[in-house]
Length: 141
Image (cartoon, rainbow, N blue to C red):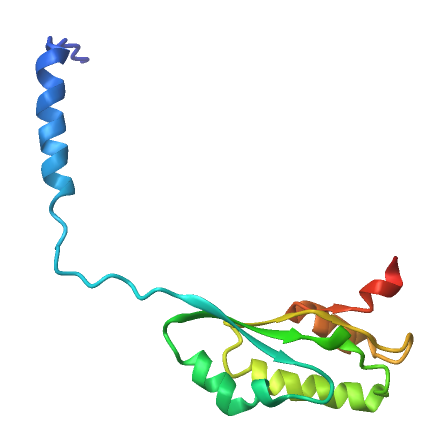
């Protein structure tokens, strides 16, 4: 059995009632809620001879600050690491990875590493790229 009943209504009368009901529902939020803290990004700069800003103490300080959204390890001064050999680059990768593991969801890399062609291991190169850095970008043009 099927019921088909048409309900007649006047849209001019119904619309204001719906608007008032909707406004009542929208105004039910608590006015005493504290606004969310303003978040910002932090850039910690380093280069081949200066790693002061990416020391674990500094990284931890920013990682546990609720107002910090992202931490970027920014490579400056051209990113020249041509004096590093394969072993040195592997150790440097571990050095950076220890710092990134403090807050892996917040820390990313920025900048371009310049290595001698053929020196960096494939897995090391891919790791740098995965973290957000580029490798020998100027040589690929």
